[in-house]
Amino acid sequence: MPSTAVKRRALLSRLLALPGVYRPQADTELLGDELGREDLGVTTEVLEIGTGTGAVALSAAARGARVTAVDVSRRAVFTARLNALRHGLPLRVLHGDFMACTQGRRFDVVVTNPPYVPSPSARVPSSGPERAWDAGPDGRAVIDRICESAPFILRPGGVLLMVHSVMCDPERTLKRLAQAGLPAQVTAKASVPWGPVLHSRRPWLQKQGFSEAGEEREGLVVIRAQAI
Image (cartoon, rainbow, N blue to C red; front, side, top):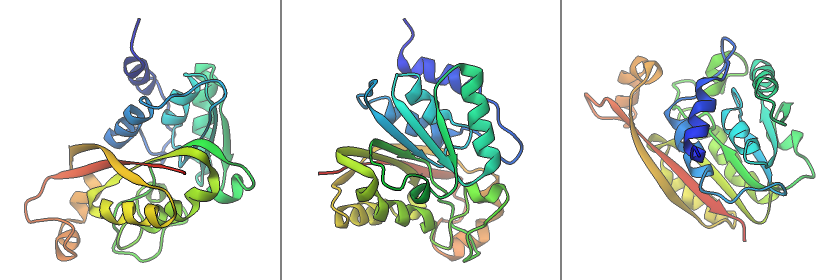
């Protein structure tokens, strides 16, 4: 029988993405691989923050978990719903801010591939495809909010899985989570080629100390935190 990882990659290859919706990339796969290590079942409640095409949420639903996915992009919400319908998988997809959408609820597993690319603009975009990656001058506008909110959306013993770039300072994420009462560690790493966005910002990234001259690869990490 095909492994969970093989099934997940087959699912990724068949997902639709409307224009402007973040397509599954290396960070999506890395996060999905780590979610594949978690024990999911029919009683497991999963939340995905920033679902995009629904790739990670659907991989959890395919394993029987009860999954809620949230995104601030209406196109992403429509795309995730469409992909769930095409694959015959139950998925609740909500539009809006993740805390507002899940008020009063707690989950066993929270997964997220948040915007994490450092941007010259101090303002986080409120529209357009850039919402999927731009995250303020240090790339942490959404990361820090998730760290602060995690204790309020995780059940005791619940797990947070978050992927982001090493440009965003993983040690700072670990510290923020620990301060919030969630012991955390890096459980996976990857090195991937720079994409168009990083290439377009090379002079600014070098000036800010995010990269070295001639650098062509980006480090990714998955951080796993667990509520006590």
